[in-house]
Each structure stands twice: as C-alpha cells, then as structure tokens.
Image 1 (spheres, rainbow, N blue to C red):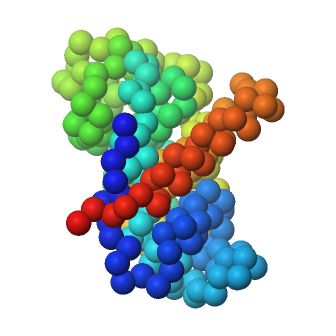
Image 2 (image 1 turned 180 degrees about the horizontal axis):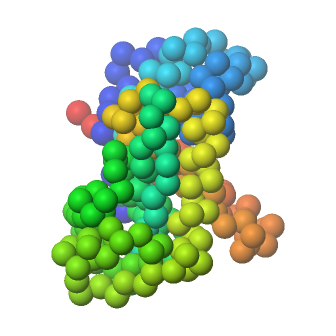
Length: 237
C-alpha cells in the first residue's frame, strides 16, 4: 500500500528517526517549536527551534502525503463543514471533509464561504480522492446546495445541524493548534501546515471512546508501525 518517502535525507546531520520524532512531536501535540526543542534536548538531542521549524516545513507535508497513500479507501458518507480561521489578524474559512469514521479526507483554506468556495472545495475533494461518495452531509449553508447540484448531482445530500457533528468535532485539534500558534501569518502558510497537520494528527487519534484499552493499544502500535515505515523508508533518488 505504501510507497517510499519522496524527499531525501541527504545533507542532514541527524538520522531519519530523529527528524521523524521531531515532526511527530510538533504535529501530534499543541507545542511551540521551542517546546519541541526542549523535549528533544531531554532525550539528548541538541537542535535549535529553527531546525525543528525547518524539519516540519520540509518533511511534514512529505510524511502526510505518504500517510494518505497508505490509508484505506475512504468511507461512502462524507461530512463537510467550514469554520472561521484567523489568518494574519483577518478571518478566513477552513473547509474540511471527514468520512463516517472520522478520517480526514481533505482541507482547504479559503477567503469566503460562498457557492464558488463550496464548489472549489468539492472539486478538490473529487480530484484528490478520485472517489465519489454515496452521501454527503452538511449543515444548512446554502452554498453547499449549489455545489451539490453542479459538482455532485448524483450523490445524496443530507442537511442538518445535528447530523454534521462529526465534522464539527473534527475541528477541535485544529483549534488547539491555532491557539498554540496564535494564528497563522498567511493563507498559504495555513494551508500547508493544516494539510499536513490534519493527516498526521488524525493518524494518531483513533476513536478511543469506541475501543477497549487493549484494542486501543493494539491500534496505536499499528499506527506507530506505519509512521516508522513512512519516516524511515529509503528516500527516492
């Protein structure tokens, strides 16, 4: 299912295991780069927070891309939602889609939440996933209706404030990161970080409330195995 990491570690002083651990720390927990630096130092790894920042910017998107390739086919019910996002002091919109199992399908940071934005996000979903759902569930924002009629006319569309709790709840980790980072400097920065963060963070967030303790540990063991395979595989030429 997986493929090799598409970036090279050539020229980096630290091994892939250390770089992967730093990226995991920053994307899994609401840490600053300096806090990640401190945690690495406790493990005997002396790097600056600027180095951690560079590793996350370079390897975070590459790791996320490989994790997405390793993910199973998405479910057939998609939940779409959008929330406010502060970017350089101004409000933008984070569009997000998850399947019925809570797996993040895609995100897109946009300036508006009108019909054009809804259609743009719907087309991005279909292009990136190359898969058409059986049902989409949204809130009652009218923009979704316009996008549905033009982009997904054959798909059942359900609208309800309460049916879409799964998508709304999936924004909580993003809110934690937004507070820790005190907002984003640009829309491009927000898009690049959140695209990687949404994949990496959700990979380590199985639905604990649905699992027994032993099942959760087994699930996490498998997720860490996949992460190690993703971050330490031989780099492509």
